[in-house]
Amino acid sequence: MVCEPVERANSNHLFTAGLADSMGVRKKPMRVYSVVKYAAIACGDAEVFMKFAQSRYKEKIWAHAAGVVIVEEAGGVVTDAGGRNLDFSKGVYLEGLDRGIIACSGQVLHDKFIGAVNCMFATMHHMYVCYNASREEESKVCLLQCITCTFATIHCSYATGWGFSSLFRDWFSPS
Image (cartoon, rainbow, N blue to C red; front, side):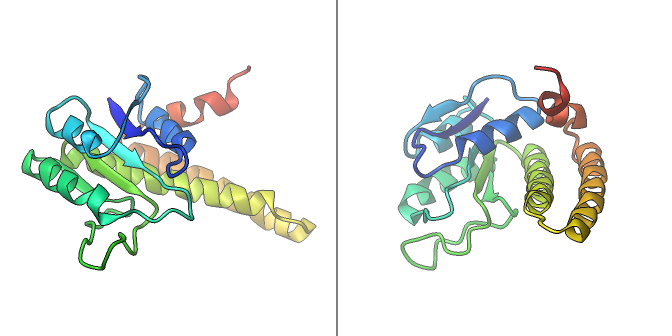
């Protein structure tokens, strides 16, 4: 089970849903307020909490500090989406946060989600570049980058244990 914040104003539910689907999670996420998401992981009601805030939103330390301690004491792992520990020593906000927060019930699951996040961000970056290519020469370069990125995504899917077919199933299946 995945849990995520209720608030849409400071989290990206669409990205979280896509990431969960790529990992084979089919249940709807449990949407909860405050530190409840961390408690859900600690007591076994959820396996992962993901929060990918909108670019303008800054995470506050008091919204996460106690929850991180609770999850870690229960054997879980909490980092930013780049795999770095959260740093509560830099003031009111979690400064330097890499893309978002991922909390998991264990290290193996956490490593898989970090790998999936990295692959999805790489794929999205190349698609964005290709979409915005304006000149023909740039389009050719972008096509090569997209091909390279597709192969990298396939490699990531097998290296991290999440299924390539589930990542692209909805993109290529007839509607």
